Image (cartoon, rainbow, N blue to C red; front, top):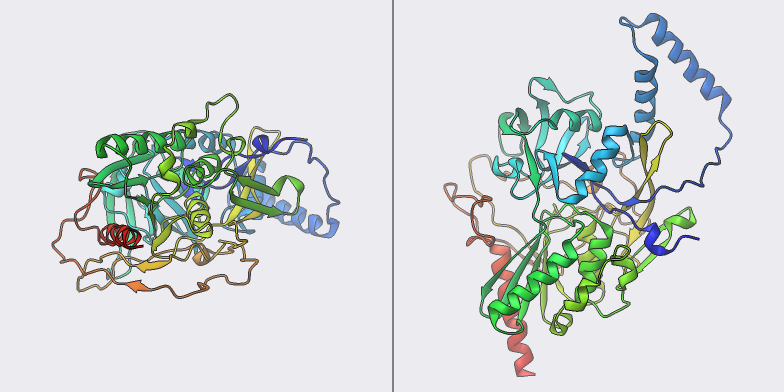
Length: 466
């Protein structure tokens, strides 16, 4: 019987250019039993296969037809199940190291087009102004319609320093426009931090990577040193964080929760898909790894916290924010998260390829399924928006917007179970300079962050009065 550690793999969300992101569990080699095959349907498949081979306008190889059939069989299930050829399988493994080639966009498929879930900070996509909700309709001069998401991602990958032109449709913009990007080796720094002012620290997790938990503890200790003592409050920023490793998500949540608190559990049809992951070193450390949380200051378990989320916060980000919310450890602020609450298992095939198959859903400690719904913030604070003649230029996309999405077992696919207090951010002028990767970690016009700090100060004032 494998222990829990052997069963935990990668939790990722969507498809990242240069790495396929989803929840990843190790392959289950012993599950080799093949069910009886439907003979009538296979006979129909054979007839179609034969007609294509003899009558199609151009010759088509057997391999292409079979690969396309497998792709269609998997992609028709849900947006996250897919066939991985040997190179795709390698890219999936490489993408969690924090360095990979591509554009730095987390994407999904919608109505045959590529839909941007979130650009990753400090990448060509983010620097070029790609926004969540953008619809990519052409790659160079090739229409995306009709491509599989795997084919589209392959076209967007390429050698560093080579250009690609994306044709983008954006809500509020009257016609499609072209964006030229230059491919690069994406080096994603997992954790950024700064002391906002005396007593208040800011920690931004950009993506959950192999060493994110360790980097988080180092950031906390650096903030403590800068502050010359414990902090009065922490803002944990998970906005536009597409997810990453499940072990790292459990480690980050464990840094702020009491030992052995339930962080997340998964439920599916097989025994291997049922896990209860707690704030315990067995659930966030790799074999032989030193427990980095031993260096976590004790005051971190009780310091007031605000967690910022938005529509680009997915998967591992939702695990962390959901756990902290359920344990009443932090106030969740921002807008509804993406809602990716499904588990994908990577199963290797004999030809060196593999399949990514949805095998379970994950649940917050209180039993909430995030699938298609996301995390509802305790305080709804919208981002400041650029006002122009075209209207709102952001079209937020969520799991529930994706074609063939998996249903929510709690029966609330797309509607929050409560209506939180809402604070609307002030509109920015159209000529305000947007935040870019070259600007400070905290942008001076970040309305949501300002609200988070004000809330932390209010919490401290109330605590003193009590």
